[in-house]
Image 1 (cartoon, rainbow, N blue to C red):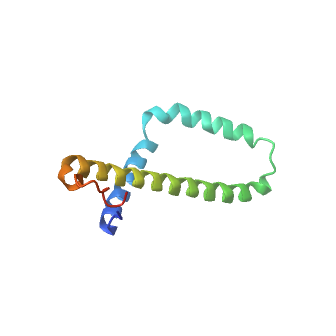
Image 2 (cartoon, rainbow, N blue to C red):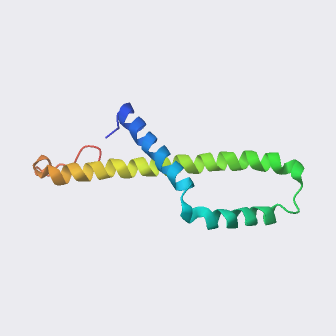
Length: 102
């Protein structure tokens, strides 16, 4: 079962909004401060000329992780929709066939 482009766009907008809200959530303030302290300690004695290379890797690593998380989220949405359809319309699956996309 493949989602249509309009549905993927709606889901992406919702993910972006939820991510923006989570980024500014008050519960994260302490964690952000601890992260900043750990980052400064980690790079206190590092050659700053190599920071650009590390920054490049970090950006690519973060993008990779974001794409993985997006695929996991979309997979969960897809399976959730399939489950909801199967529960709401059990007569569609009474013939013993698996739902489409399974």
